[in-house]
Amino acid sequence: MPICGALGALAKETFVPYSIVFAIAWWLSPRRRERRNPAETSAPLSTRLAACLAFAALESALSGHMVLPWQFGVSLRASGGHLDALRANILDRNLLYGFVWLLPIGILRLKQLPRPWIVACAATAVAAFALVAWYGAMPGTAARALFSIAGPLLTISASVYLSGVQNNPTPVTGSGL
Image (tube, rainbow, N blue to C red; front, side):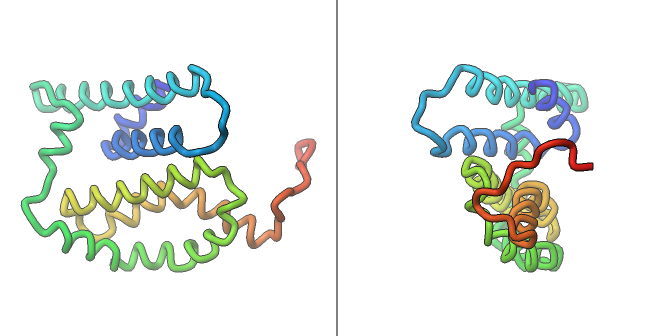
């Protein structure tokens, strides 16, 4: 997992904050009462640490001096227009077209999917909107982020609804191909 974290950070800088929020929300979501084993804590922590280190190494190499992930994030803060950027992204046609059909259908069967996944996607979506406002991002930024964050969850939920699968589907055996 740490290799995936490093590769994600090298591929896209927003992977770092989004993956951290996603992992923390997943870990904190109330999914069971039993005690967590050490692997449930060490794998996400080591992955996020690898992502932060890879990002810091890349940015430091590009700039010629040490750049920590939070320093990079602070440097991108817009000087104003935070709420205007947020409003423009919420009203952006890319967001509306992408979610006007997926969100209503996808919500219908969310309860059949793992609660930690739902909580993590919701928390990361809120983080995406917060970063859009922080950066003063151009319209379309939130749509791309949200489709990456919540698109898979909503698509599976919509598929479950449209296929008519009930709460306790019959397990599939064999390859089915």
